Image (cartoon, rainbow, N blue to C red; front, side):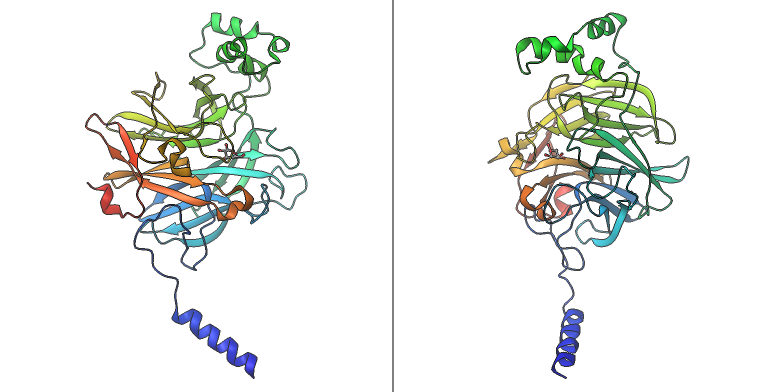
Amino acid sequence: MKTVLLIVASLFLSCALPAQKQTTFRPATEWPDTEGKHINAHGGGILKKGKVYYWYGENRPDAGGSMNTGISVYTSRDLMNWENRGIALAVSSDTLSPIQPGCIMERPKVVYNKKTGKYVMLFHLELKGQGYAAAQVGFAVADKPEGPFRFLRGLRPNAGQWPVDFSQKDIDEALALDPAKYANWWTPEWRDAVKKGLFLARDLKGGQMSRDMTVYVDDDGTAYHLFSSEENLTLHLAELTEDYLDYTGKYIRIAPGGQNEAPALFKRNGKYWLITSGCTGWAPNEARMFVADSLWGEWKQLPTPFVGENAQKTFNGQSTFVLPYKNKGFIFMGDIWKPKSLSTSQYLWLPIQFQEDGTPTIPYREEWTLKDLMK
Ligand code: GAL
């Protein structure tokens, strides 16, 4: 009888006390979903369909660095209150699958392809038991934004292709670099060889390494995969085919040897802005920024957009995505990683401000609302 009463009482309480509605953004805190549980969608990105926002991210376990569930999806209409819609792309029970439990799936980004009517997900894929050595990109596709996504394949991009801005002389020079001569990393000679394409040439046949990443769809519907390649030393920006499921073979390198990770790309008033981090694993570092008039470059490096106390550590966060909001402004989305328990990693969402000349600036805010974007 007592147990029955307890169950009835707890049922009543859980109905009577719905999860508290979020009315502001509060970076670096717990962010409860509509059931009151901390959102588990790390290294994520957002797709808007109609009035609904879909937030995809890494569904991380409480302990350990590999996956046992897959990619989460949450939905919201106001960007503050998120409903857990489950796993959009699930790990596979097939022991031959590249996405079996124990693999690593990071930084998923989903885009909608108007021509095919499909939702396409790209993510960083590492194979079970191989640490971060595989350095692949995974492709998955769905008919609906909430999934289920079907895994297509994992691969290293652009096998056999040189960057479009490589002349025959550049190709010859890269091919002449003897890897055995550069076994010692970080020497001035090694840095020079990296810039000239030491790892590009090494990986030409099997495809280029692909780790931290984002996907960007330009106004004309062409999609681009932007990823940390060449041992995380150089970013590659690669054009995708019309169905977004493969590469056209057209790509450029950005900041060769510059060690950029966590790319987040957006366009404002005809200029492309790119925010990245340095390479210090889960530990925060100072962000970087780049600007270009065309995606194909030239990309010019600028100082970090973050300003104020602890800006040199990006307020303990790392970029993952920039979300345009209704032509009114842009939201910077980042992760505050908690490597001991990745599921508890927090979020750093902040409104981006723009200086008179258009340069982004991101000061810290303990609490803010979408109205702060409209100023
Ligand atoms: C970071 C990267 C994360 C994750 C982590 C693993 O540099 O941005 O996405 O890969 O390293 O140590």
